[in-house]
Length: 102
Image 1 (cartoon, rainbow, N blue to C red):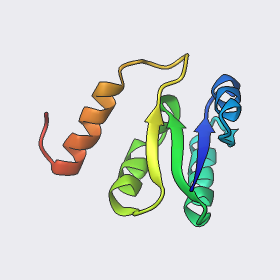
Image 2: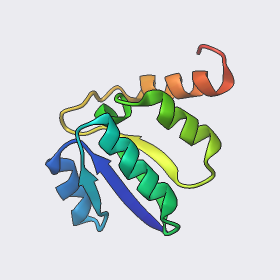
Image 3: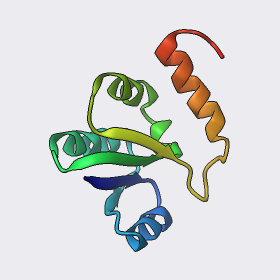
């Protein structure tokens, strides 16, 4: 079971490399979707960590993948430049999944 990181900044990537998680730094919606596709195709990758800023570039696509793909698990992580309000993001995903505003 492997992790991979899709980040919008080098600091997060360096921090994750310190604990053995490799990844990439991307900045555009197309790059995010391309890296997600690579992760889905790679049978070894079970968990994809994505920074909040990148999730905001393509929220509908990522939400659909979370609901429909059995693997990999896609996890949003805040970075040092991002908002620490991860609770709102979780509420948004749950609301989209069950169709009820929390």
